[in-house]
Amino acid sequence: MKSLVTLALALWTGCCAAAGSAPAATDANGDRIELAAPARRIVSLAPHATELVFAAGAGEKLVGVLSPADWPPQAARLPRVGDANALDLERIVALAPDLAVAWPYLAPAQIERLRALGIPIYVTDPHTPEAIAADIEKLGALAGTPEVAREAATAFRTRLAALGAGARDGPRLPVFYEIWNQPLYTIGGGHLISSAIELCGGENVFARLRLPAPQVSVESVLAAEPTAIVAGTDNALRPAWLDEWSRWRRLPAVEYGNLFVVDANLLHRASPRFVDGAAQLCAALAQARANLRRHRP
Image (spheres, rainbow, N blue to C red):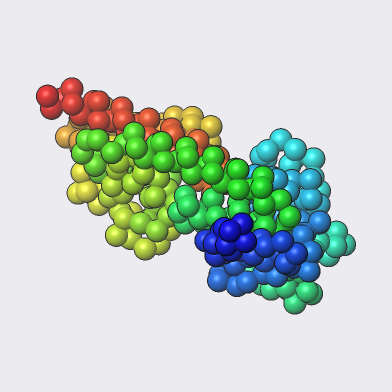
């Protein structure tokens, strides 16, 4: 019976964790990464990947990280192997990693060079909250820390479920999520933040757009008539440009006092802290519903 449970769990998570088997997992590209033994020297090539590795219980196995690696605090002490502009390939090779965790949009040509050198590459690109939890479990399988990873993934899923349950009652609110004002950027329907909006009982007014971060016009926002406008900024500092929407007094978000700000460091990063950002977003939309009820008894 125990072997059947183990097999079922392996099939569900996309990784092979049966006793005595080589660590393996399928990444965001659909590639299967198989290691001869659990990874002992890991290089993280994306800030969110660093957080995922720590959550999976393998932080002590990290030998290099990409700047800025600002969470958890232990990551600040690790050697840097590049930044958003370029990877330091020589330093990465010198660190002799037996696993690299990469984001597909960052330095793809350099990632391919590392792969050609025989370094196993696990690509992480979560577009849904569940994909974050799955990445934690898969990285735990590759690093030989499946129990810790499973506990972290379960805690993540439990918190998300609680947030979703709290947002089930009441109407779904049309939401405009603003990343920047000049030029005006938002998020498309396939973005992780769009999933958070849905989780919190909202509807992304630009969900039809396929680009992750499309540029839109002020006129298109006014035409969409969002009931709430949410800005994502570092540390949830309220930007002056958020309140510039107040000039359009008939815009529902302005009429009902529903201009909010959330911490981009949490909500914009596909890491375990995403759930903290989602909690801020859910609280904002809950306040938006309360404001709506006051205006529409």
